[in-house]
Image (cartoon, rainbow, N blue to C red; front, side):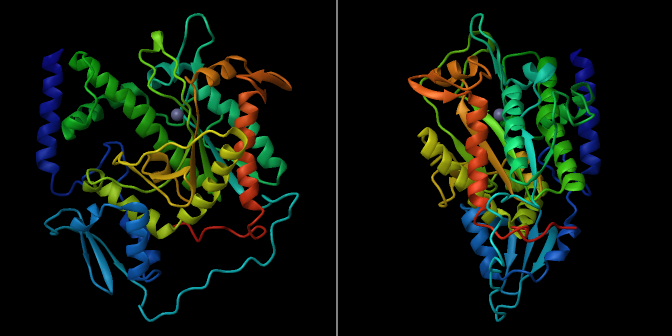
Length: 423
Ligand SMILES: [Zn+2]
């Protein structure tokens, strides 16, 4: 078997050697090739000051992109390489003399009974669940209790959330609404890419103590449920659904050990992610640089912070659950807008166009949350960990919905909150 594997590696290696000149350097082998011309519509739309401010505050707080940039007051050029020999894109800045564009004041506030009227909201229940829950590694079971499968909790919560948002006038659309993958690709299709992925960046891959074949399979599965699946959802969002904003909903967890011998903790935190905070190692790749530019120019951040902050406020007031703290993590930084909202570069919020609010709910393996999940979708309220509570799906959906409604009541009726999609 290893001979076969070695042969595949040699084929890939030789292909890489010959193709290196014209091949973009991609973070994930199943990524789409960046199409920089999509950003041409943004030429001359923001000043150098605005560009630098967004870059520093949101996307690149450590200044790692600077190694690939050549900037003067009229334009910035982004290069593939640190030697700055291969230009990827040139962005012309707005004239420094042009007057700052005034924010449009709302003509009328949203209808208070239907504050989401005219809005299209995309729900993205995290993970796939169902038959795929085991390979996604988002399930655990304790003794003879009902297994906790995150993909199923996410979907159950999103269905209740959809009811609330629809009742407030929104058109709700979904990246997926069942336990079937959105992508047509399956792990078995991704073995060549899995080998290439291992070769491309072996230091970055998790290396469990398993055979090389097992490692390749594990990587093929990872590429399936993470890269291919999220990219298929992104295509649906960007090409068909075109929502005003997307809500990616998850339940969080502390590390639970092996799925068969999971352990409980007594800690729960919640967090909301807004896109940003690229790391230096991510910024070495063409697709990451492209997405940073696209997101910076699209300017979805103000909406992400406003909506995320409003949801965080609900978590604080109704649950009293503290926010995560990623200070010093190296991969996320505080937004400054709310202690609950952090900037982080995730596949979904990088690839979905428009504002994406990524919600990480309570810890599934926190002792009281675990009991609350095990109690299921009961009617009315019950005592849970000393508090009178509705079922967890209802409460989580209500926290998110109330935050979105709170935000919407401050918005102009039916006008789009963020500027524009790239073509
Ligand atoms: Zn999740």
